[in-house]
Amino acid sequence: MDISSIEYVVFQHIMKRGTGKIIEENDNYLLIFDSVSEGYYLACVDHESGMKILDKYITKDWKLLMVTEPERKMPAEKFRVYEAKETLVNEAMKAVGASLGKKAAGKYDFNGPMECYQFAFINADGEDEAGKLLSEMAEDEANEMTEEEGDLLSVRVADENDFSMLSANYNLISKEELKDLVMQGNILLGYDEDRLVGFIGQHHEGSMGLLYIFPEYRKKGYGSRLEQVMIKKIRKTGFIPYCHVITDNKASIRLQKGLGLVQTKKTVSWMWR
Image (cartoon, rainbow, N blue to C red; front, side, top):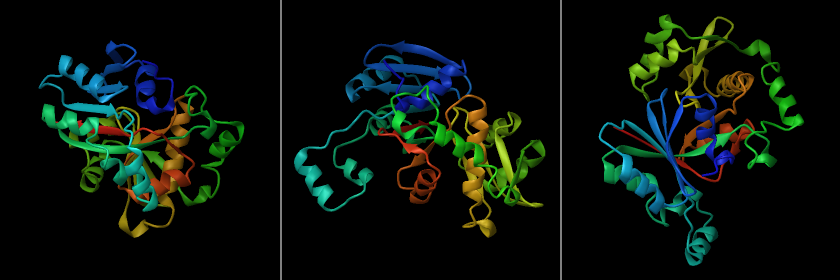
């Protein structure tokens, strides 16, 4: 299966860093295992292909599964109704039927699924050229990200002494995973002078996340600044910065678009045990 499109940036990231093992691949699907996240990742052209490959390999030992959702096409008569009402895309898509993630979670007894929009920091004209990071203009903007208003925010890498503070304020992942990310240097702390305003991280599979701003510092632009720093950090390593946003998280969606990230056409669904 061709994964050169930015729709499959997760697969590109895992395979490029050398931690992905292909379990099976053909023109209709790709299933890989990532040794860092200890998760399984599936891309497929349709629901039938996806469920077929999962039936073949899935076991009770699988703790984490991500699927890239195949395109779901809405009948023309339903599309006209939702278009007339200016309904949000994710609400409209519910009318099409269950996602692959919902089918897999129900059949194989996973928690979730958590369906997310995917955003990537690339040249908007190069969605089908995942090897290209940015146009010259976009690259100039990225280089300026941490220079503008640089006196407003400084960062440092979190260490084991910061774990108690991090775990007390962020509970969307397990404490074990959080500790792993700290030990790997994947969490950044943001400071306004000597005041800790928040933190951001990079998940095991490579996506940006864990963004948290302390309540007293919210709506001051610190979240945007922290993500800008993370984008530049990831780009320096030669990877494409990307993130996953739950489909109803309007604030985070606005943040990603405001930072110039491109929303991919396909969603991804996460499930876990």
